[in-house]
Length: 409
Image (cartoon, rainbow, N blue to C red; front, side, top):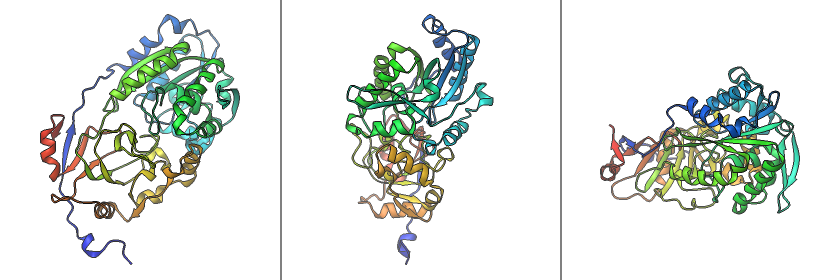
């Protein structure tokens, strides 16, 4: 029997209007000059000796200018006579395999040929210590055996927990470099203690894991580089707390009133650790996102997975409806390995699968309490790209009242 009735299939969907969301932002206009200035400090030069083998971390997120920043860091170290190499620092991502993690980096343009230095990808780890709470701390063996490790990552609010330390250099040290084993073990401590756990584990890595310094980026509301800072080893934790607050202030949002349906064109690990950022949609699979001030959304529809996610649909459980296209492209091994390691099986639950985009939207509308003015629908490309959104015509009065919104056509 058909899932939707004949009358439902004939539903006239509302006309959609493109609008621009205007955010006040800062942006680094010359990335090369900024990276060079930050690295070319006496405190950093004093650390580098000819012949040192230095591991540079590279994560699994779609960070603006990430490949460029990693290459420039490697070039700078080579100028000083060091021998840098890259290690994937992404926990259980990439299907929790060495080749899978190398492939994730390849999609970001991070290859040995382009970077001009080796990429050593392995899932082997060494236990380097324990936290005060007795949690074992693991570190990628290639990084641990290097003379120095440089942490390179973006600072941003995490998708599942809150605290003074969330997603950034500390999380990369504790979970990214911990690979599958370390990632799984730290997540066993639970989300309620995750900020504390990550900070404690990162402290162990910083003290015992040959960390030289960190390079931290913040992105603005348009997903562009807003700042780049080099942090000495003993500055990392305290300065990351300050940068975390700045990153939260720079976050974009959906500047619309409450929605019946939010259509998200694509999701993936390159967009967010949760596929679609709970800081933007306001929900996790278990609760409303703490501190969320954006629109209340009754139903979410996801239309596709990004190519760069390689079938990893972690976070698909936050959607109510999706398409057969998503279902057919889902890599169960990559998704399940990631979500089991994170202790979040709910995030891998499959929403209702409809044949195509139109059917998914109609089904979502049927599962909403609709007002007299008809379904209020918003549409975004993904939760990173929020400069432009589409809205149903009945939202135009609210758009015109908001000075940060501009009707495009």
